[in-house]
Length: 341
Ligand code: DAU
Image (cartoon, rainbow, N blue to C red; front, side, top):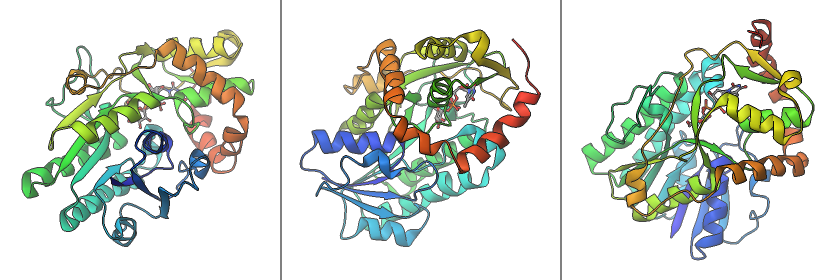
């Protein structure tokens, strides 16, 4: 199988490439990545010289870069490339529309023109919006509420429109909150762990009662590969971890895991604008296809904390330069509006 992976220097994309290299010895992988702030060559250091792997630097919205990555031809595209951070989409939405909608469109055009046999769009449970009760299923209406999730929903709808209009061989996966090694430290778990290891406070938004469903990155990568290989064309598959937790529960666990205390290290700061309270997806369709998460959450979280503890050389350089400027923009006003304990 000749595979084009886009965004393969990111968190989930790099886990997927490592998985394919490990478990599909016949696969050839081309990685097309724009190397924006979260695309990190260090994520694939261990396989970058593997003869089955090659790299093209470019944006998915650039038809010339996509053509270069496709080269003589490929069998499948898996699209991980995206702007992914909700808080950044509130500060600066335009890049999200460009990559998550227009970038997806450029890839779909290539799939159509080059007659590529399979295209998998990596999407998110956030497209269903806030779910007060019950669990979202694949046929539920999309009610995205942030510039990020609206952009991802726009991408999904383009993918499904190409199926309906041109019969394109597409698949969509919608994953829940993902955690594990190599996650850029803007997201809740790596941000809090690295702050705590540095003896710095952690900014918990609002009352901390928001619920997310946590999925280990290995399980997420495995789910995407499973859907790519076994999914029915035109179908959507939810991939949920089955580990719903409030942010406060997660914070308590991380604080304990880093040997700190809630009183001294947790700041209750101003909430995210339009913050979704709860995501919850029903993954029975992917399970009926033969996938299920394997990593026990408590064990996975303990090992994730240990990974950041033991890989300071990986994350330390990321928490400088652009990150510090972003952190100031994102959090300075929040601390001022701190809501206390
Ligand atoms: O649900 C899947 C989604 O999970 C993905 O589609 C997104 O790309 C990914 O970023 C993630 O979105 P979230 O907004 O849920 O992830 P984040 O790690 O930013 O936040 C998790 C929760 O923690 C959320 O309720 C906001 C809260 N939070 C986050 C940060 C960064 C805080 O309380 N304080 C923080 O500083």
